[in-house]
Image (cartoon, rainbow, N blue to C red; front, side, top):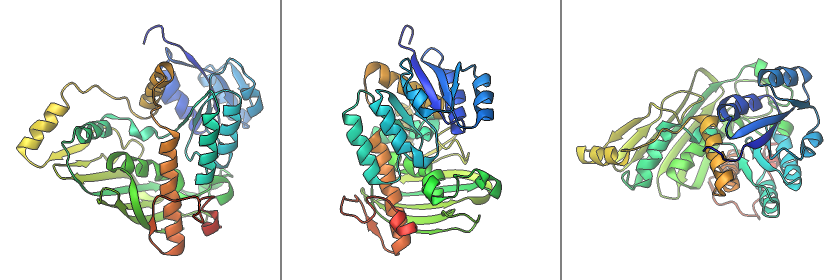
Length: 360
C-alpha cells in the first residue's frame, strides 16, 4: 500500500501492549508508527521504549490524550480501566484499540457504543486469534456454502496459570480483572466459536475455583445451543499441565479441527475433513487462489489499517465485543443460578449492568 497514510499510535500498558507492538505495528512500518508509550511501571516503560525506539514515554494517560499528533490510542491496561479510558479517548477525538474485555457489563458496552456514534473515531476491540490461515480457510469454505448445516462444536481452553501469575496485583481480583478464565483466557476461543458457528441461543454453565487461591473462576464447563440448532460444548481450565487450545466444528459436508497451539488457534495446520470426494473437490476449488492471512496481531493490524484508510468496516467491531460479553454474562448467570439462560440478554435482565450481582 505504497503512499498510504502512516497512522500514529500511543500504546497504553506495556504488558500485552508489547505484543501489539512487536507482532503488529512493528511488522507494518509503512502503515503505523508508535510515537508514545504509557505505563506506570518506569522500568518496563524504559525497557520497551528502548527496545522499539519509541520516542515518548509517560506515566500519564492524560498526557497521551493531549498529544495532537497521535491518531490511535491502544489501550492495554487492566480490564477495570477499559471503559473510562475508551470513553476519554473517544472524547479526545482518537481512534481507539482496546484489549479484551472491552467492558465489565453490557450496560457499559452500550455506553461505549453510544459514545462512538457521537465521536470522530471508532473503537476496535481485540480478538487477534481470528487471524491465521487455518481459521480463515475454514471461514472461506463455510461462507461459500460448501460446509452445509452445522451439527456440533467442541471448544477446549486448557492453559496453565501458577501463583506467580497472580502476583500482579490486579489479576485474580474481581474488582480489577472482572472475571476469570471465561473472561480473560477462554473468551478468545469462545469468540472463534461464534465467528464460525454463528450466534448463541442458550447456555448452561458451571464454574469453579480449583487451581489457585483467587477470587475468580479458573475452571468452567458449558453446554450451548446455537441459533442454528447446532450444539456446542465448552471446557476451560487454568490447571492444565499441557497447554492447548482445540476447536472442532462438525458440519454436514466437512469437519474442521484446529491445531492444539494454545496461543495460535487460528494458525495452520487445521484438519479439513470432507464428507466425500465430491465435497473435497468443491473445497479445493473454493481454496484456489487463497492468499495467506498473517496470524494474530500482524493480520489484525494489517486489516485495521485497510479499514482506517478506506473507511470500511473494522476487522473487529464493538458489536463483536458486545456479543462476546453477552455470552460471558449468560455463562456467569447460568453458573450462579444453576439454570439455563436464553440469549439475547435484554435491558431488564438482572445482569445487564454486570455479573457481579451473581459473583460478588
